[in-house]
Amino acid sequence: METYHSAESFLVIPVSGDEVKRQVSPTEQGEILTADNGVLQIKADSSFAPALFSLQYQGEEWLDSSYPLPQPKSWWNPWTGGIIAGPEDISLLSLLEEPREASFAELADNQGNRWSGLKISIEVTRNRKMRGLALHHYFLLLPGSPVLASVVQIMQNTGAPLHPLKLHTSAFYKTGSQLKDGRGTLKNANGEQITYKAGRVQNETISAGGIIQYHSSERKQRLSLMSSPDQAAPELMVNTHVISSYVAEQLYLKDGESRFSTPQFYLLSDLDIPEEAFRDLLNIKFNL
Image 1 (cartoon, rainbow, N blue to C red):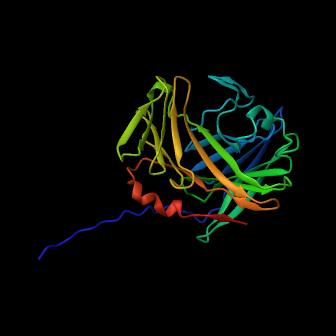
Image 2 (cartoon, rainbow, N blue to C red):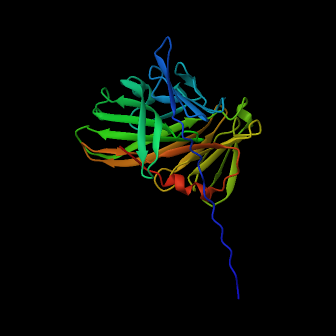
Image 3 (tube, helix red, strand yellow):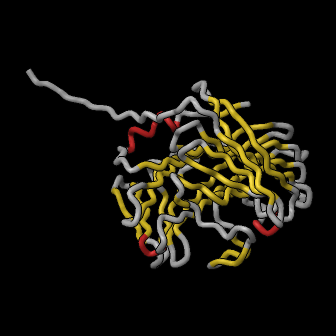
């Protein structure tokens, strides 16, 4: 008689009973809002950009940002770095001219978890085609957990349907003190696991499995980006200036409709986690 053995991997995210701490720090330009869950600390400043400019794991910075001011970098002008989202039809320069504000926020997911963190809101008033569109970008934590969730609520009041609205999310990473030591690992369309080196030639590759791992020999931890491979597959980009990710999602929105984008998750860990263990995170959805 033949016997078969099967094994499945599951990701267990630790959550403490503490609350996510909040802090407001005045600056010359505005004020920094900080959320801290005891493991991860995130920061945003609406006077800078509609972006998360800092993600620290146990005191180490994992985002590359131009904070406190946008500046040119590579072919981007301006460039803010961090994690930032916006419509394809509005340039970053135009997006920076729109009114915005940052605040503390909470959201529940479809698994019954209550997430807490930061929200950056933009209301489009200058762009004629997109006037009336509002974006609320949430950056959310669970107490004691090494996971950051990023999701955008789109409120569509442009007076006409958007078929589609192309929403782009970019993130720029700091895997260590030297860019050339940075690496990005993913599985391509053929199922091959490939590692790309930063600080050299340019490479752009979509992750067929929806997961990209960012790492370096300098740090024990890896930052894993997860997004739905079917709806919003992440793309790795490395060049002589950055190591980054790019996610594009098409949303079909009627006038007056409100909807959340596909969530993206950033996990920091020194464990070698198999890709199939991430599927529970990818099943999480957010609602008000």
